[in-house]
Image (cartoon, rainbow, N blue to C red):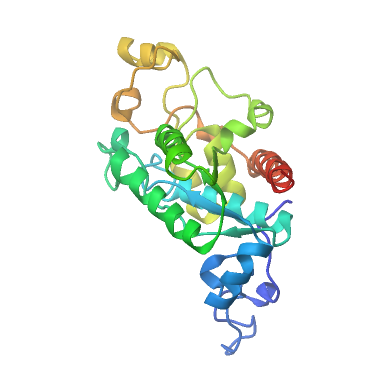
Length: 282
């Protein structure tokens, strides 16, 4: 599981190219477990053959001076692809949620956010559509920690509104603390830091400007008193990221390596896959 899954004929070259100069005969390969690539007939069959739907959720927000706005969505979609490949058609990838709950990043240019109410409504309406077609197991894979609280709320609500539906959600990096520890992260780390940058170097290196990677706070002494209190854990205190970090980074992304990113991704994929396999048997 060292790379994203490769569909048949994908090795022939980039989209629209056969890899031979002047030829444009080949088309991008179809990914059989993606709902978006299915016909309506195939989707009806997939309710039985792929009874779990995976919804990748991310964010459209700053990731410091060296990484793309879509970082969290890119990671979630990649992990969803890898999990679905491991499951061999027993799971379907539904549409992504590319904008998440990111008001804490709005001080940084380019960031887009949904309110918690809107994000919850979008998730519920995705679920309602899938439920109507017959799916009863839905897993949201979120690359953005800011979505977590809302996903937990949606899960509670669905116990009442859809009691025969099973709704699960998972973060990514938090599934692989052992792999993250291998990066020897600093006292303060997290957003756009060592772990996220490592994952992007593995999954989408073209979206990482390695020459622009700069550290943010790496120790509690680098934070102001309110930020130190917010980073302590519980009781929980929310502050904006421009208060935590002038450049939007927590930790030192320069320490990241693609190998460390692969270790994190592979660990997360393995643990999500194991969960879904057990879930399918219940």
